[in-house]
Length: 394
Image (spheres, rainbow, N blue to C red):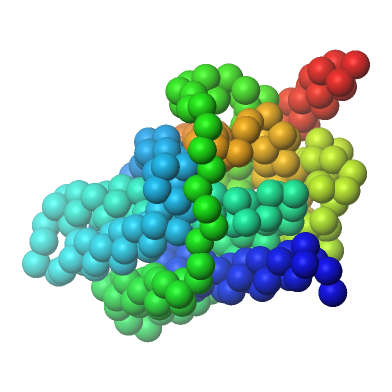
């Protein structure tokens, strides 16, 4: 075996191990996602808009801290950034646990819940950007594969975390669930502590806004893609309850299963055939899945729509992420990935409250109509990105 091949194999094994740690840690996000809106509406007796806000505000916090996470990853290294994020994960879950104390008035408990969700978003930012910066630095020619595998860890957690979180919520209450969510990131932290970190990249720095100017088209594409997932994650459980269908927790499971399946089968394609092509096909599939959810006559069709949505969402981030990596020098990759992920955060943070208002006025199916339209707009933006690349190479 040649020395470069041996180094690649060792880096890939470390990537798989880090992805396993990310999977366990990300359960702190995934298990709470379908539960928060149910907890707010059914236990605290607030409306769908406040339930959506409690879900989406974590993503707004993530958005606000992407620049900090990217700069920290570039200057201090991806591993310290990721480790700090895992500690913040645990602290956020403990704040949410404290919010469930029954002696609090509902409004005060909701306020603590919002504080915990804000802290969770900060932890997500540090963890993900640290993981990406750390791993891409060790495998710079396989950025698409890195992004695909990291996404498998995250959305695999969503597949397991949806029904697991609801089951723990019904068995032990919101407080019991939050204690589990606090323990899992500490396990992930123990797993990565001994994994070596690569050398830092040095070079000329640029402002965050200048980096955004390089990557805004791929970023806007993933923003539009994220609307469908955000609406599904926040409201599919309530959609099933409203329709009188059983097994609402399986919606996220089907989404995650489709997501991971496509990542396993197609994770190499962005590096091989180009990210734009992969993203365009993916967005078309997502739009079909969202339209099926919008018009679903029964639970089976709704779950099929969730599956197709997951399959469609799967490769958009790594596809466009490959385009982002091409646009920046090595010493700016963490900052670029922070800005790139921030576009997705905009969708995740804004979709919850807006979709909640639409659900209040037009019913839950309207949430998925919005997601389908956004996916089609994302398809158009991906096509414009491809034209921009072709013009630059001409």
